[in-house]
Figure 1 (spheres, helix red, strand yellow):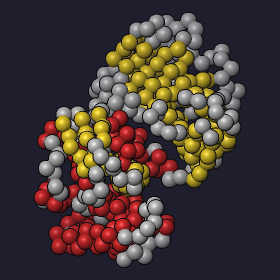
Figure 2 (figure 1 turned 90 degrees about the horizontal axis):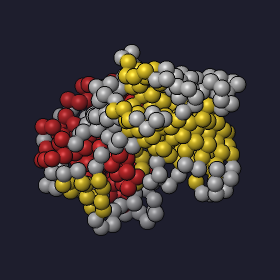
Figure 3 (figure 1 turned 120 degrees about the vertical axis):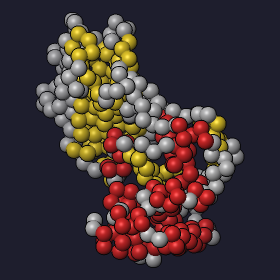
Figure 4 (figure 1 turned 180 degrees about the horizontal axis):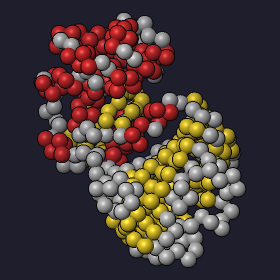
Length: 371
């Protein structure tokens, strides 16, 4: 997207004339592709854009619709995306735009940038992996970081189960003995055999979220078990979100094909095509087309959401290792936005407060969510 196209799209958005495809583009493009000269727009123009957005928000509030219309969602998206894109220029220079009376100064120190990962061997030995490294390579006889530094020699006699766990606020890259690569999200655990050779299937267990790039092996299917779901593949790229505090397991396929089977409740199975996402729950498996970029943004250090505040705060809690509590009845409507994982939590919360639908109070590592 060049500068002229970006400006035309934003003006079209403010006029309410975007197509559905353009609305989807608006949700994610500005944080990454907004032209540099737009970051230096005048403060008057910035205020005009905000005013137009709030007018449209007010119009949608007066309707009797039970759910946000697409336009309402995008209006909120614009508020957040302006803050995360154009608006951060003014956010830094004019903090008085946002009422931050309830935002504690301590939150400036709450960052998602840390890695404290534990590798547990079959004999129970725990190895604290270096927080200056970003990945580990698991071999039958040796453990190394992904830069080649040796961690420890391993004398594997069989298919002992090894586990790697990421705490809240961390993510880690893992290369399994068969060459399969996994990116583990925060608060996740992956269990796997230290040796796949001699096994009929390559079976691993996931709790939390992981992105898999499976090494191809037609004779030995790769199986991921997570809660009450099983995903079977030969070689492909996919993401599984199986946190126990979420209402369903979400499996998103990027490349290749996978077969998903539920293990309890209403037993069913489905095959996915690239660009599809399966949601597995007590009622079975539902498949839909999704924006895979949004579903996989976490592994590249981005936080893209289009959810209600409780869903967003569960992600923030895992990402920033904070406790979240609620006071009063918070809005059930959806918020849309894009942020970098490198941002401190106050930047996200302050942007959410711009919608005037939710407010926050922070005490240490506890975040109170209020209407």
